Image 1: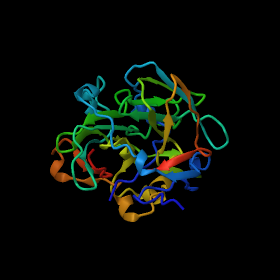
Image 2: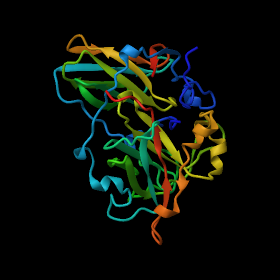
Image 3: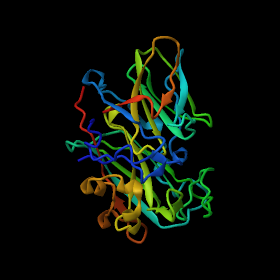
Length: 223
Length: 113
């Protein structure tokens, strides 16, 4: 049996998440060390616009909802920062609706909110977004299924094999206990890494609360 | 401990833009198919090699994707989709200017990295 959950990742095959039944791979083989490529894409300032990191300033007016700061660092398991790497996020608006034609949830779209952001990490691996807190929304996985509020994250490590797409959740959300996607991570300590923490020190008084979300990738050795 | 993976979900197109590889005469195309053989119209396919660089394509309604790129012996391929709690990893050899590579999520072997 191939150890597919060795990094705290969810299993591919997780029947509680209905969409996995026809899509989860069934034939897994260990990547031979000879095929392990330690290289990966490099990004630069031309890949992002400074306004991309402020999701509340991408339209004529301000979006509705609770303005928040989401900030943290991209690190490897050895604690080393991953500098100048691309961080992409996307999310529902404050009412729980995505600006996507396939989202049929009858909650209002916000003409002042697209819900997409990107930025590069600094030399210290740090990133920072300003956005609004996403709403919860129903989905059809099972009767009365609701996703906890979340922000999707896409990050690149030093090597392409270290690439990670994940979701950030909010502390104390009672829906976390009922969400098959969050619960697919079986190790409670690993699961907790998906939950951001309220960070008053980084909040801007009279303006926005801050949530901290650090992202830890595999420590692929340098070439 | 690493941050665990979570699915890219159905609405990634809000935030993940497609991006071509640096231009070249080589072409890779194919379809992403589920366990029933049906097309996966909401998959993200990314390719990488040191020679060809990085590219990202979203599948169309028929599950099709395509890339053009420079000469490279192979491309590492990752696929993200609703229903995949983690991406899948594979590699395709590039031995001619036109390569057809269908990705059958439940029939093809994938690497655990």
